Length: 330
Figure 1: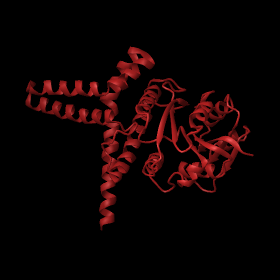
Figure 2 (figure 1 turned 180 degrees about the vertical axis):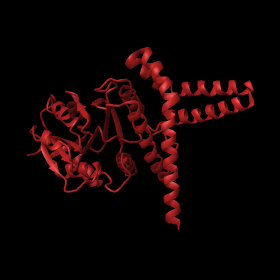
Figure 3 (figure 1 turned 90 degrees about the vertical axis):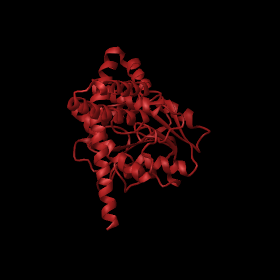
Figure 4 (figure 1 turned 30 degrees about the vertical axis):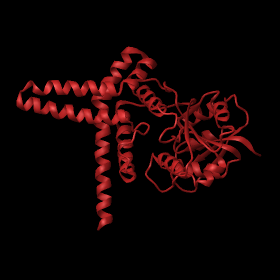
């Protein structure tokens, strides 16, 4: 039976979050929708939890990744509009109504939402990440990409554009799909009223590991795509300036220690001030969401520790990219 919206959720070992995800989905105030969960050969208790809810479950025959899971859900959907979220995302009661209102009459466009500024688990590292992503993804009305954790697209358009790439780098298949849509002349539009709440469960180690992994694969893709300096969502100009500033200050600090000259102090200060000015809107978002104490701590984390993981991931991605190119050249 046809529905207006199909909510498609890829799941792999999401037992810790999929229950809350489906509870939130079925609490929606919008009533013309179906929920499809595509299980990617989970070996935890996910399937048993999913079966407790009146959703459609599709089980893949082999571990294939979230791109194929989303594509398979789209192929077997009945809705006119597809709305993709993740198994660790919680719909707000009015999220689907916002999707329907936004895309009605604009089915030739692709619309994106984002995370709520505050996550489900409001520890420091999860909150930092949620605010960072919310700010980065809502900076532009027409963004560089639409994230797969809150993407609304007509079913016909999605299938006509062949969906997400199934043999590709992990994490950023939504970036490749978005870029392919843009090359086809399709507009991407961000609506900050389309919100999902993310469950991060981040610790310091998980936060830094996430930054490393995303930077690693994003660098590989950006080098291939020749858009390394592009202001692209979380791979923002602010973040890139932040990493570059960290390197400059660190190098100047080493020279300061070796030479025992104060000549490096002023340039270090100027670089630090320039970096803070460049990221002022992000830091203001931290202040607005959680207050001055949180914003101060977030500023220290963002400028002192976070760039280490991002730069390490970037250098790792650069090394992998160069190695692959060298092997192919031979």
